[in-house]
Amino acid sequence: MLLFTPGPTPVPESVRQAMATPTLHHRTPEFEEIFKEARERLLKLFVMDECVMLASSGTGAMQACVLNLCKNKALTVNAGKFGERFGKIVTAMGKELVELKYEWNTPASLNDVKEALAQNSDIDALFIQVSESAGGLRHPVEEIAAYVKSVDSDIMVVADGITAVGVEKIDTTNIDALVAGSQKALMLPPGLAMIGLSSAAVERIGEGVDYYFNLASEIKKQQKNTTAYTAPTTLIIGLNAIFDEIDKEGLDTLYKNTAKRAEATQAALESIGLTIYPRTPAKSMSTVIDDDAEAIRKLLKTKYKVNMAGGQDHLKGKIFRINQMGLIAVHESVWVVNAIEMALAELGRRDFDGTASKTFNEVYFKEN
Ligand SMILES: *Cc1c(COP(=O)(O)O)cnc(C)c1O
Image (tube, rainbow, N blue to C red; front, side, top):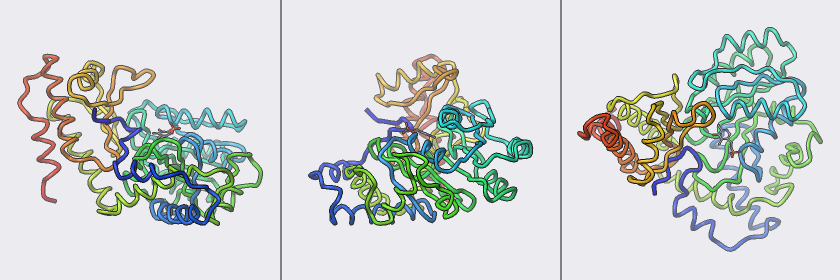
């Protein structure tokens, strides 16, 4: 079975091997060395001043940002499940909320942000996804972040990059916190969350806002290459192993190949009459809206052995999402669009003639 869900993503063999080594004690010079290496590589990935690793799923890091970076009132962008989650966390943590809501294919508008800030001078933090995974949507985060900082540089800009860090180069100039998770673009098992931080964010983080997600004490420990509580040692060993894999060709090649794969997949899907759902597609996944979405997904899983993701809530049964994150062999991506074309033939939609894989190859291998 090919795992083509936009998280979790497949874990490369070398990474699984690295994580199969005997358990280390976390309070040892041996592990501190491993932690130091992972930390230095993470800082380069984020291109930010500071970073912190947490033993939690990605949502834990989202909550840690709400707790540590928003004092009273948050502005959140809800164009899908994960944007909605920021709002729910803000409310659960007892802070005030202004939420901008969009259909799941629609990127946040700068004008709406302008208006919300004009009407609520007490907003002290913005929470937004770089890539909203519910519909595979890319928000104009850089533009919005630049505007927010031009209005008031004290407003903290928190970007959820769980399906963007490791997918594309993100301009972090105006971003204070950038969240990443292990099981998406970083091709690791679930359970490790990471946050890239600006020095302004580090300054803002107060003491004692939370016990487990106390980023102030966590950062102090991690600067000394240790953690406040037991570190997820296996996942951090895996993180170094995935960086080893990525470094074979370099981060820029990973970004370039991911973008090409997303572009070629989109062209292939459109060439066989399918409709891309988001107005501004993210590079992390390709999302199709179709009345036969569930039938196509089922055929792919049972007959062609490809596991894609469906939709949630009002999009359940209406979309399918194909992963583009990570180190994906190009022949696997060709197989996926080919299998979709075969499924369409099986459903009586169009005759199979190899258009999807032909288009994919033409776009992916075109000379730039
Ligand atoms: C997967 C995902 C999350 C949540 O991560 P968990 O690890 O399930 O907590 C948050 N934001 C985005 C954009 C995601 O894709």
